Length: 94
Image (cartoon, rainbow, N blue to C red; front, side, top):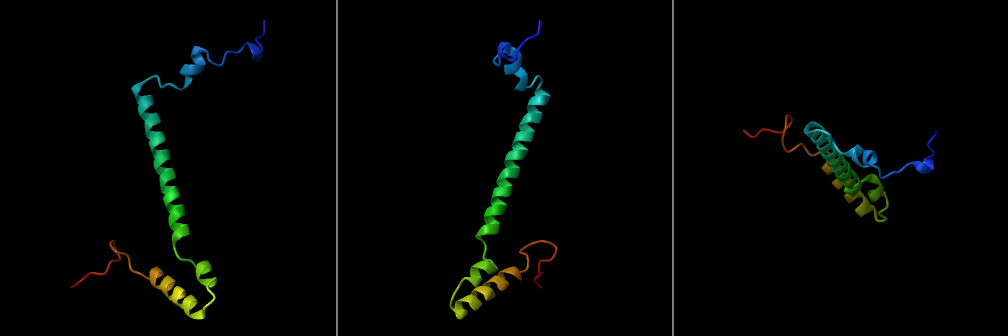
């Protein structure tokens, strides 16, 4: 006798317990994966906000006054050429 899709009970014990971890190791693995996906998504969101919020050539090009536009370009150039605050290329003070 064949079972049809109408006979299938989606709330049976096997379907409910399919996503539950069987061991503490599986539980830890699921937690680690979920935590890493959460951190990755937060990082991508922060990178998108940073990329959109900074000054860009498009924002400077919309300004109508040449003096404001040149000032915007100067500020953009100055921000792009700043040396890093720390790291291998930081300037050392004597």
